[in-house]
Image (cartoon, rainbow, N blue to C red):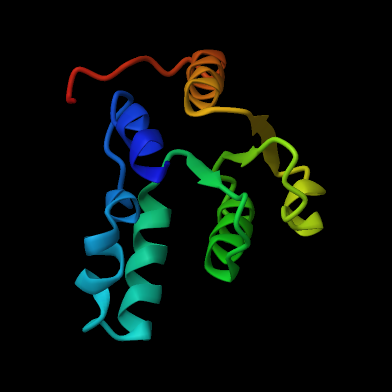
Length: 128
């Protein structure tokens, strides 16, 4: 699922956390990195971001931390979650700093991304 969302997002520019969609890279590829290194690197990546798209159907303290930080840095945040999931944190779903969207399928999530990027004036990049 993450890989399919990342492929869509790559049409609009660079996806800094592309490793999230590749299990072999996200787990095995970072096992030698220190927690401090990952923390500092991820905040550096976040600081460079123009927008954060987060799939929040599965609770994650790290993603929540990144969302809160992005909001405090005034980086737009869009959260996507599987329709009917009750696991989205109230701290996320209740935040005015995020735009929240349920989706039923990957094509549905792709349409949400397209619509939101169009509203923000973002177009498909020629880089991909």
